[in-house]
Image 1 (cartoon, rainbow, N blue to C red):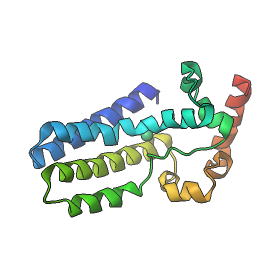
Image 2 (cartoon, protein in one colour; image 1 turned 120 degrees about the vertical axis):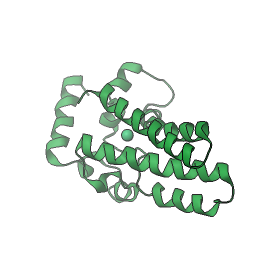
Image 3 (spheres, rainbow, N blue to C red; image 1 turned 135 degrees about the vertical axis):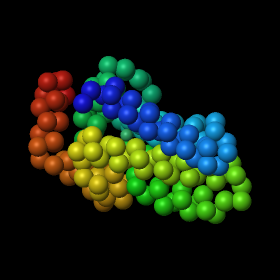
Image 4 (tube, rainbow, N blue to C red; image 1 turned 180 degrees about the horizontal axis):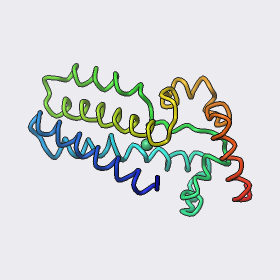
Length: 163
Ligand SMILES: [Zn+2]
């Protein structure tokens, strides 16, 4: 699937989750904003990953090629984690009397979980791949986290790029 379609699916689902919670909790724009943040801008951890590997000199071409994952052989993607779901639900419950916080936490929880579910299906990764604890105990290491065939593809891509 082309990346733009993948991102478009994320965006549509993020907005829908936002509209739903915005409607339920009667603050449409806060709902939509949090939906986009939790369900779409969550992918900004790929940019964060770039800075962690290359520091502050940004090269758009390198970023498009996902070089940050290839040169480091690490997959951190800190925002992609099932673990945030129960945390945000708990916070939403804790702050249930404060309408805005309730909207923020519930929308982030569901928008994020739906994003990860979409990623599991589209990227064909296992459920556990999107557990930050699982990635942590595997040292965020690509050869440990990816199955042999996927890692082999990475290796071939590296050769192609001359890394
Ligand atoms: Zn994602």
